Image (cartoon, rainbow, N blue to C red; front, side, top):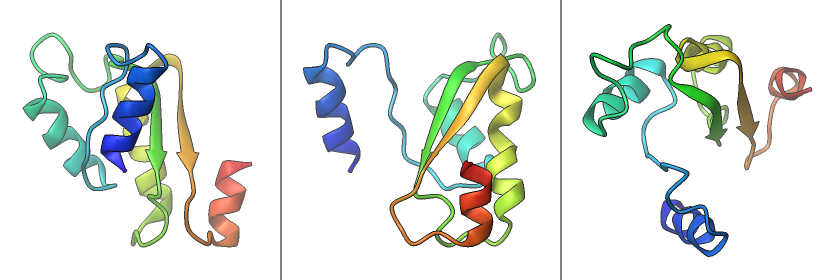
Length: 100
């Protein structure tokens, strides 16, 4: 999936604009990978606004705490930033409510 996303971004001329990373759905997993990729550090810290938008793909299929998992990355957003959820599995009523 990640290779296809990278290729699509490249074909659309957006290869340098987007960073596609693979990590778990929980905030701890995301933060760990962001540090490894150099996207968080001394200059870019939690709560300081790192991203305009975060797209999360297929995260609600098997998480234990959906509300916490969905809300977790908001500490990485600029003031008007948003988290975009993309399904890919049969979602619960709760997940559909969050996406509405």
